[in-house]
Image (cartoon, rainbow, N blue to C red; front, side):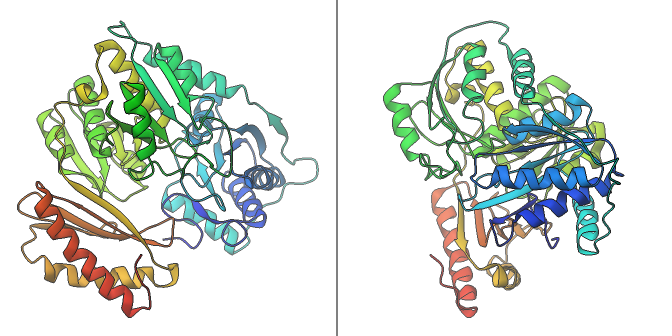
Length: 462
């Protein structure tokens, strides 16, 4: 991992990890990286420190001779969209996505709207730490242009792509935008597609008063109750910057993200006939089954880096995804939760079905995904020791993946993964099995091991 960049750009508490000084240097480093000319878009989410950090990044870019196209407050997918749409040299987004309100972050995108690869991030770090900045002369500094209209252009293009070919039923949707950057966009798009939309937590607020911006099952219990009472066909929920999407059934039950990924894979393979589906290391075997059923090839990679495999596989790769996140190269090379919402709702309208009916041929296997707070100073030591002993505890494992943490696959199609978070001071346990009993057995063994190792380093798991 880089000294600044993690799994998803630079991210952390404002004033400690992310600061105006760092933002300025990232902007100047990016200007140096692209040769001190051209244009880059800059956008930001609803966090209270985002306008400040956005201005700092823009100042760095202009100091390096690059023009800045400021789109203002917008979701991350819209910022990424601007690069290829406007023919720019890249983009920079100020966002901490699903992190707590005190945090913020910086993500860099290339001319295709794709998040920077690790190698590109390493080059930015090298420029920053070695102070290899290239400043423009007084008569060559960058200009600043405001272009918030690109949000409307994004909306219109996405609506055109997913306008239902027929209306079997005007479905009813409830959308929870977590008071985030998509609050004025996703509900609008779904209404334009023909859905009846109820919106909650859809006013901008950097304190995220409605709920925690991470759309995980425990956070969305309240949304599920409202969905059931309101008798909707689906409930959808974003994180703070709308690169993520979660979905709940008409009865308010959380839909495992892997089932959504499997559905997207099925759609793309129907469309293309064949191709490579790229997913992250923490995904279910249900995706393997669906991809095999519809004639595709599955490849697993690091969390937060599925876009890098898209580059590696080129035209053979027809989709990449990780839980909550989808990239469809035919739309763009960025993660887009708004795109997911439009795709699901459009298909439901055309078929006149609830979300559970849409996914009826996608199996659901018991899963657990939990995180524990472990200080950054020791989390990798803890994880390393846990990995060594995991192989002893699960001696019957059939295969392993160590590209991002350690995943052990068992002969009975169960698996367990332990990894250190790349964005927060946490260690995560993921597991899946074909029965609740087997899942409980795997999880309890893993948790016991993690607890024992963490305590050696003075960390009490809560």
